[in-house]
Image (cartoon, rainbow, N blue to C red; front, side):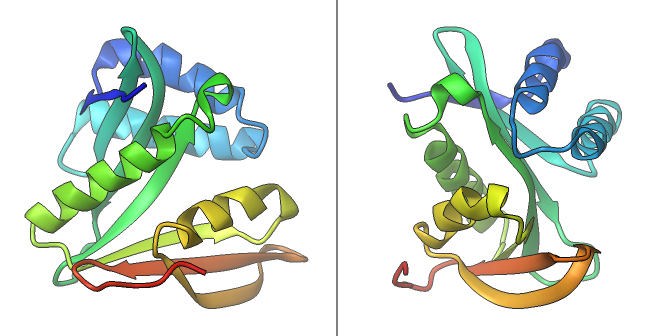
Length: 163
């Protein structure tokens, strides 16, 4: 089922926090940071952009992104989460495509995503690789010993072949 994608409302916060807490890949510290970003958006939407995917009037996932300060046309996708029961139904792909379109309409030319090298994030990395993102950098032991930072990018308007 195709989700309805709309701007996040304050009333969506409890559902998003439940999704984050029930996403096994996220540590409690990561959930806390995601919560801080959500609260920042609710109090000052100029810092981040958050859209939710809704199915049958229920929040199924969200994406958070923003323009990278001091750049011309570079944007970051900070968070993408889909309710565990809604994974594999196209929610993440719909949210990502939506964000890419909006970023392009806003003059974006380059999207950056940072993620972990932990095995729990393997599906996440493949998700982005299958959508035309490429790994451009790996910083060893960035988050912790044996937990590298993986940086992916996608140039908008350029045709790229997924791995």
